[in-house]
Length: 252
Image 1 (tube, rainbow, N blue to C red):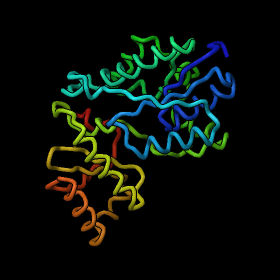
Image 2: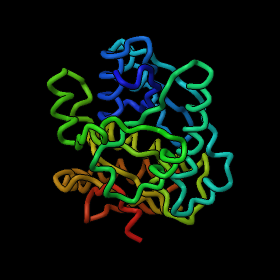
Image 3: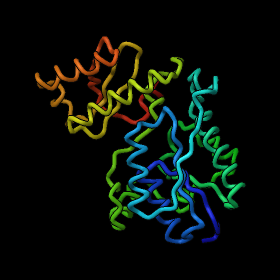
Image 4: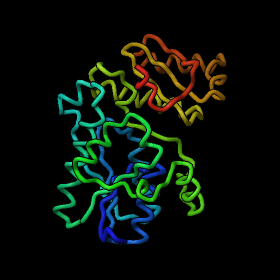
């Protein structure tokens, strides 16, 4: 209420959906949820975000971003996320100025503050506010509050941009992002939810929740996965025995 009018960087995940819902409840038409579409966003995620916004009655807009045209982003060093968010916040700042919104906000929560996230530096540079951090809300609390409000994404697995599947130092390309997206989409069609396909050129390293590891080594399923990912260009398909862990590329 104190912010008067806001743009919410909205991906359709639990954090941004909760924030956009609260902003809509409090500010109505003075809150605008904005989703950035680019090759680093899986097409299914964009579809889900649009559908959810309609379901929740949000004031919603999709914009196009072109971080893939920035050589600093493509180079994929440890600051890649900064250049990606820099592109996003430039667009959102310009949109807020054109449309007369007082603030740009994001769905960062207190749990995000302990990880390596250069994108937070970009948010700081552009004066982007994080209301969930200001309210001292952690991920689990946001899930509980979202469930109480009946938000269908309250238990949605955490997502990250497709470029986070590519090791630092390996250039980001539309071809690689598309291959990763299609591989993960196929695995989800098998009923898997929390997963990552880490892209090591000709090697696909699949991360799953420990309880899901057994599914992929069943003969028929294993054969399907190898054939499908092979058709996408992966010569070797591997299963990471450490299982899913967010930000695993930061280990090195």
